[in-house]
Length: 636
Image (cartoon, rainbow, N blue to C red; front, top):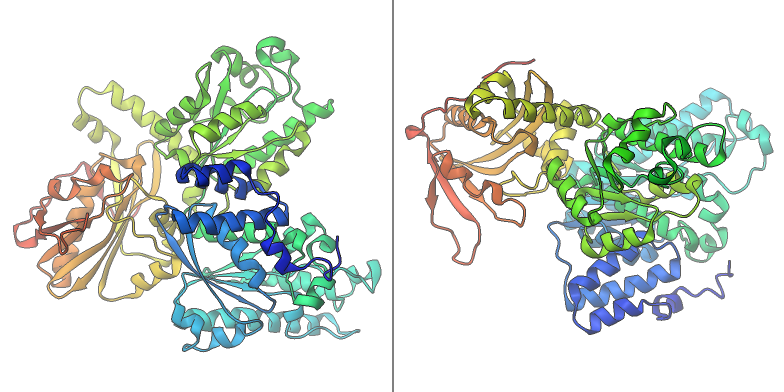
């Protein structure tokens, strides 16, 4: 690595070599959509710092000519006890690569405490959606002294947590936003050697204790950026270079800048639901070694006793862990269907079983076609898919035909597959709800419901046979994570597509002028979980609907009519006489274009002639409750 005197940051920012000829040609030809796809795909995988800076320059040029088409722009505050100037452009590109627009306010070096504590600060006036606090071990308020006992060290751990989480609490009180806070990487030296692991007052031992305590105590609106874990993966001496700290107060080395901003961007994107839902896997030389059509099930490599087989087993174990936290699995393989299924049915060494996959496409169709069918079967967008295939030609055709699908590049060594998928970070989450853990079972229940529907003579009889039960209640603290997740992930049954952070949802829960509601539904096949969210604000004599959305897995089962009954009843108790609704069309929510008229709302003239949204009103004096095949219960 070059010395900082030879590695001038301003020179790097203006160098133009190693740019992408293809990208340059696309922009010069004014093929801006293709240019964006190419740029963002590169930004998701590039690891070299100088190359990433080149992409940042192309990002600025492309934005000037054709702004990125996004459904959400995030206001991001960047504060730090380290220099953050070098992070701004790379972080903007990393966020853009995940589908979000980004407006950044960057505070001055080491003024983070003043900015967070002062309700009149420039950062507070910016009113960010997310604040990123770039902290380092150099910002620790106090350290143990040699010889301090465990009680004294624990008191200093408490002090450190109170310092950082207290700043977050004060900032959140007057600027209700989500906060991304670094934990602390280890120091690159160990003056006490291995004995430090037994000494409570050792600096690295102390940092480990602080990190554990921050994880245990951080409130829901504070999301830890696991710098400790990242630095351990890359090596502390690669992650942090004291030369860059002394010269420019850089929180990470140039080598580590890209993984740092990419990891930060993934947390930000996850806060607003920009996280993939389904992992689509090839089979031959992806889940096992060999070609099952040629070698037969007995000839493929999987399981103990063979280095290649053990590597594929480890990959399947990693995939199973993803499934256990709610990631959907699907197969997309060029194969005969019977051959593709045979290893799952015949080999006990297989970690993954056939019923772990919710969609199974083994045929000779182009893989982009199969990916579209998988998304349709699971009722999710193709942008929710992650595609893993050992064949670079198949990866490239998916990139070209379906640029919204996230494609993970593999090497020829299956031992690297778990790390490569893990490094891609496509499944980042900031919360883990019961619905997440039960998602696969819920989709399997949907398959059984579909079978029942096909066996019943008419649809009304089918709905009655489901024996549905629903709980409808105002927002509650215990469900805020799931409510926020649904708000930010629902696209099809979503009348306004308003996206909110958890803090913004909590504000509405506590506002006495807000009518909020969530719906949980269960039936004879299992619990669908929390599947619908409603929020409206009382303004004068009416309730103005801000949110009305629902998971697509319970479409056309009467939930929207049951919720309309509930809202009308609660609105009367609120003392209003009408409901005002807005439908804001998007590329994905045409499904609910006619929801309001089907519920008895009357069309109103738009406030502005150029506005695409349509406005609707329901007079409660003329509303009669719907008859629905769902039993409204207190709990189930």
